[in-house]
Length: 450
Image 1: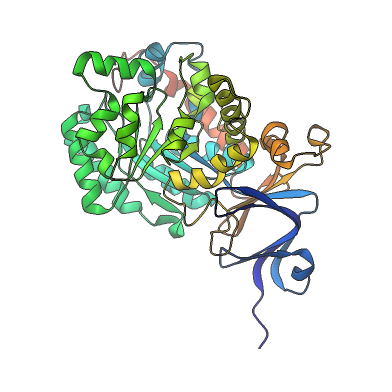
Image 2: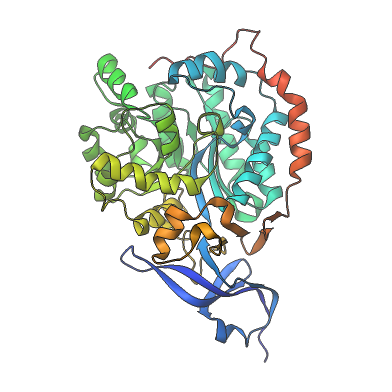
């Protein structure tokens, strides 16, 4: 009996591989066989010639990588790109961002998410973890554009119990949505905007419903020191005493994680991960960065992120990968850390683990979802190639991504977006910007005072 054709076969490429010891390798002149949205096999190109497929992509001269994961962002905030520049964190929140966000409508969120997804698809991001408002609109965009996403409806204690209830309702309503491409989470904003009672209630809801938690914590050193001065505990210690560390939790930023916090993270009974977005830390002139080396020694995955484009100006995870390597070398004073291969591991498998997808995504291997990007290294800025890992991390750019595939579906082919009409989105968003940016009302959605 003749086997049915594969859905997709990618041939004549170099495939990034992972071994059982967290090492990175490359399979030359390889082919990837995809069936029903799943990688069926990684074989030689010669073997693939004998197989039939509904669709074939000749990727000669290109490298196939697992799709990148943006482990912490606020996708709709691309609408605020560049409106709050060169400000300290407190002024950034209180004088610009939180007044503007009080104007947000669901349509603004939808258009911002569409533009963000277009940017991420073009940059080789196949999955993103989002933590924002009006998240029904973001879930609808994910369904429409074909990406994978880990979504949570953010809330503050100032919203009363309704905020926490909406976060739970969203998580339960959309869990498994978009044909399984959406996973969900509870999303308290941060220990400085969500009180201990709400955090404890969130931890209990997470246990009851089998949901993870995604929140900001110890974002910077000032927050950690302010928490110690006011309450005698660090933000990480708050997470421990409220039970958040007893459930699966994704901590955004963590540049204020102190040495005293490390044993708590090591001994947490839940799965702990941290998302690092180094460009924003440099822009805000924060004195420390995510302690990637210390966390790695504890076995805690550190995923790469961009944060929102209002602070980072970009959703370029490729840049986050390079900056993570460079900033780690600088802060540790050790040029041997972080290596290009280690950076690739953070950008792929560790990032997938950080958002709870370590068994489904993050590597190109049989049984994994077919979230694949093809990177063209024929440009003058990537030639000659002496060390392929170094070329990918330190020479290649997000614009070198030629093709982006999620669940075996091609979302971008040869730099052409296939699921989002960018000019139409930009035009409609532009018409809404004046109302969105109006701060004459004097409102804020929250007060930043750590």
